[in-house]
Image (cartoon, rainbow, N blue to C red; front, side):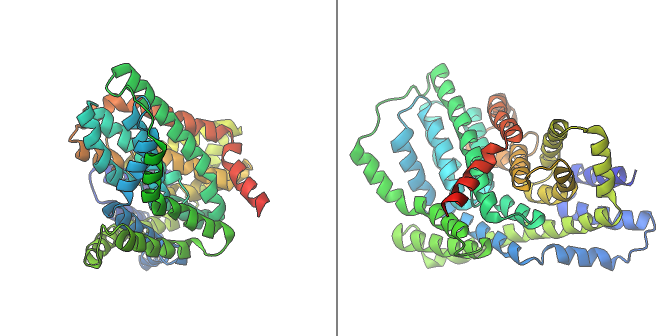
Length: 430
């Protein structure tokens, strides 16, 4: 009963438009007061502070700043040009370029919003000029932008690694194959759309000279994820140190190599990153307060017992997990949703003897889908603004893309080898 009151109160406040941090804290303090629990309200404050204290969370603002830096600099432009030279000749070529560009940029930003904004601002005008519908262009950018969450520098992966205690280096590799599979599914949709509508039937492949020129220009940007992830996997630096290295590398290539930015642009980018990071950290702290109450009152165990009584076998539990995460993610951003859901589902995953790295990829992939699910969603609104399209226009084209990506989520859910194969391969090579 208490679990229904807690989650019902929170969702009611969230649906009323109450800011997420306020809704979380109001639910926590309200339940403590309403039920006359013998906890001083100072406990809420202390659990809030404790939620943002872990050292590993220093990486969050650093990765946010890296995303802002690369989005404002020339990295996104070079990546799109390189992808266009390689794949623009295919049917649905501009759509294919969009997906490939989002994959590559996601590998250096780790943020779905930064990925959607940076690549969308470059490809959407070109897609509209070629005759693509506004709704299709926006839907594709909104969906492809979320591929960043499964790429090695994913910020949700970093948070999940902190919550679950799994290795960030293993988790960063586990998401790569699912990201590539999702990208391949979207590429298939784009090629089908290009042939069906005739707006982008394809052309001739680029010359080797053009490919070499574009590759040279995009080289420093493309080397960034290799350099950073290689450092994490080899043990040369921790994920937190990798975030600092990413900032330094991004500054060097943006200011000194591409020269698209100058030192006078840094304060503005720092301010934007600070505002975004502050919002994220406040929500993380508030989620920590609610998680403390849920743990102290045994709500997590009650939910686990209930799910265990319904899901007697592993495949039923996995279906319930996928549905619950998508529904949760519709109302809450991926990071706080991950922080709320992980403590509830991890004990159940261990009861079913699931690999926790596999569990992290499943959770992140489902929450990524929620980012572009109507009526709310971070990448959905960014793409709609860039394309000047309504949610209704986007939704008409969104379902086939959602079906493609959700099919991949179901595949990686029930075929765990897809997430474990690459980490094991790399581990065997060390």
